[in-house]
Length: 116
Image (spheres, one colour):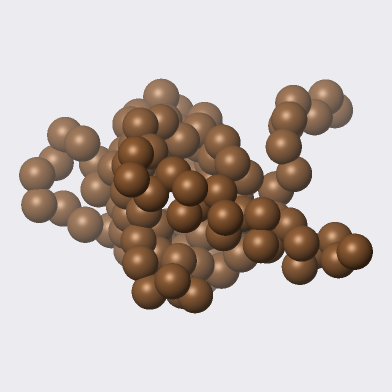
């Protein structure tokens, strides 16, 4: 199988809120499974369609802050009744004032995984 990932994915367990752009006021809870600087994989009770654009609020526990961005869904699959769906996508339109916060969080997780 061809691995098309360009960046290292890091396992996390962070809380996310997912809002479909076409449904005003609907908020779905999820949990990030892994992250990279370009995308995330998260679990959700809801199935998302490939190509769908979602608004994500990603909570960084250490900072007590969240980062908002749009995500285009690359894949979504049902894992099981307890886990629900796993969904992966590419980040778009990251909140400009928080780009460095997310980058710093990613690099901190990278250092934890590969200590020097």
